[in-house]
Length: 332
Image (tube, rainbow, N blue to C red; front, side, top):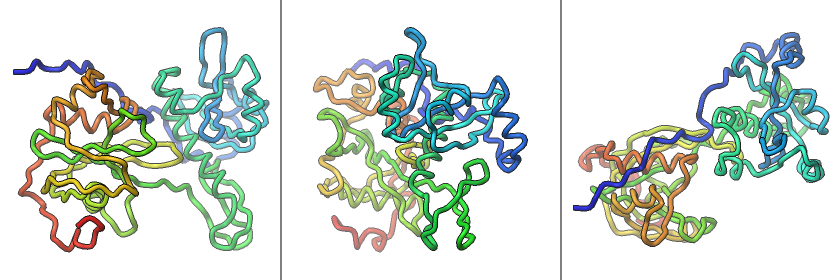
């Protein structure tokens, strides 16, 4: 009998600490917002596209600035994020071109947020407000004009709404819901590879939820479309805000009702079944072929680990989908 694999303590899920009070009731209170920003304890995060601007003092990386320090960096947008440990918390936007110029400064570090997170350069407590700031500010950068009439819109409600002065339409921030799922069959799980992954990387299948579709329907459809596997029971696990640019990852486990893989190579590069032990070795970075899974910051790690540790019991007899659910799919 093979020896058990020690995966160590369960790591935190990235961007999901939930430690910020969004204080939505203050967004329309301009006097209070001004007072919060002028308070000596106020903090600011600075975003530049997919990059995050960090302070540097000697060997120390500092993720926050004062609002005054942020404003000195030629910011082009501002939002109120809420309060963090009682202090006002704000997000500021710097254009990509200006961020390139800032890279010349010795007192700043400007990096892709994925790299900042994967390298553990800042405390996990800062990832939640940074994700909020990045998602919200990215939405503003992409929605400067009214989708109804095409006129320029203005920022209001402390950055949580854009109003069109021409037709009166109000626009609110949007997120893209994505299902990400581990399909299992007994002691085997289905993993796939995207063409953009490193050569040894495998992960859960994933896809956007379509209009008029439930989470369960999206899990079954995406698994069938990408890998040709029919799924039955679908069980929700947990979710994760994913600020690239602004998605909500909805993690699930699904019960496989078939085994033969038929890959849609327009969607993924490869898919295969892995044993529970193989998945455990990948989580522990001990796989003999150096195969790897996403880091703990990603929800895929947690979905797979939950199953590896035996905490998911899906029953193939439950919630069988009707044939009409998948008869029209490409790989059916």
